[in-house]
Image 1 (cartoon, rainbow, N blue to C red):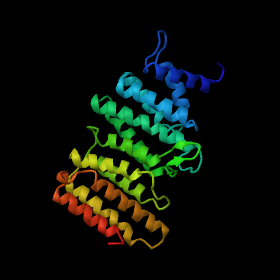
Image 2 (cartoon, rainbow, N blue to C red; image 1 turned 60 degrees about the horizontal axis):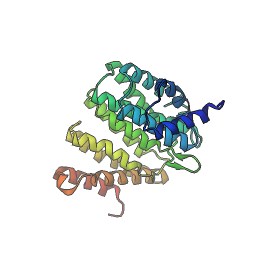
Image 3 (cartoon, rainbow, N blue to C red; image 1 turned 60 degrees about the vertical axis):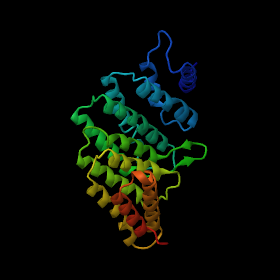
Image 4 (tube, helix red, strand yellow; image 1 turned 135 degrees about the vertical axis):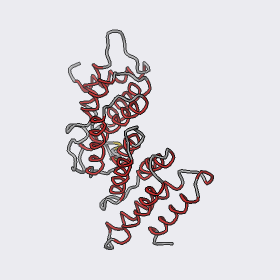
Length: 279
């Protein structure tokens, strides 16, 4: 078959039906290059239904690939042709390359959490790349007609949730993550409507449950979300206010009543009331 895209689709469909096991004479490395090449394919069948699930099975469930191989994949995923391909552009198909590059990054970070293999310098590069991506991504569409899920804010949050669980994630890293989440919530051009707030709430919930950051630091950050109330009135201000309010509600209901401390409940209720003009 001369069409490499069609060949990849055929191979991945067959691999899926055979429970992600390869046949005699095949090597996983033979499929990685074309999977990385077509990771942002504008049609969701290849990108979302075949490539990502194959990465998930091979990287996380079957735990294939050596540390050196995972480092090599990560280096490609974080480069200017993948995570930062067309960064800053909106309303075009480049978003799919970026958002479907960050998902396997999250899988690789999960592997690192379980069996650390990144050096301190490699972790620093990873951390800086993920923070930069979350700051610079401007195409925040959720579901795209004819293209499927883009969902940059949600996919990026998934990777940040893994980042904060790394043994190298210091208090400084946790605070940096909180700041990029706040910037995303209060980006003045996009009102989230595809449950992105739930995925961002997961990151903060992880910090709380795993005691990754002091309660005073988290409480101060939660209350700081109310700063947007004092912005100049207008559409931008209302977008930031609504996103922040919806995020707080998602975080509040993440824990059952018996799991919420009095301090946690009071801070969230105070912050939400400050953002809710109907109170």
